[in-house]
Image (cartoon, rainbow, N blue to C red; front, top):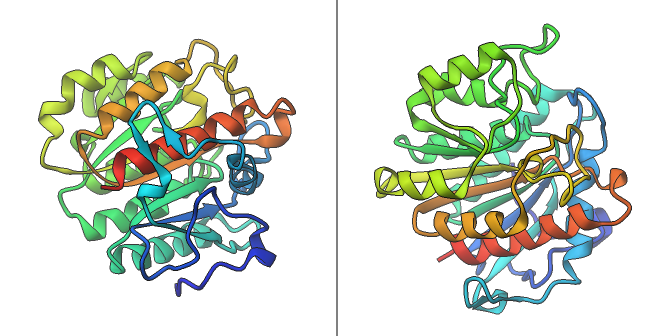
Length: 290
């Protein structure tokens, strides 16, 4: 898929501080406005646009990382125009787009959209980096082989990743919801760290050093007290301080791609979820784009 110059008439906004020059950019932000397979509350296709819109309220400086967005050059490509209702074709188009980002030697940062969109981005990362490792931060296992008979679902995305690159290359953190069978399969096959994120991540950092790492982050890993705007909220999650600490820790690794998914802004009129998502994107840019 050709990456075109950003057209504000199409997407309506850009993430704060984004450059209009793709050629000089170190990173590319792109939206994946899809919620064709959500199993409870829909609306995540609206997430990318609203995350951009609320980003204007952020400071460009991160006191957590002592870096400023002005230190970077990143291009906002807008939202990928996905075929409404066609999950498989949508994932394929995301894959082709992100392959183009990697071909241009730029860091891809995706905004979802339901979690199935990550399958397209991770496939592109796998093509670029055959020894890829995936860090999955989420409330849910997402390890079903199918959901209600459908293999393309936000409940199956990490199982697809495991089947593709091998479950021994997948690290799961913060999980607190799934079937008994999924939890058992995860304990036996992936690197599985339920309930917590930062503490177990810090322990496994040494074994991830030297590998290319893709990070997929579902906003519902947060406790719904902090991020109620998501389709399948689960109590018992992490707070923002742990989230920011987690990104600091991930910054010690060779992170080669990142996505943040499952923000459903219409569910959260307070905008807390969207603002937190935008701040996590800011931190990710500053931590991962060297």
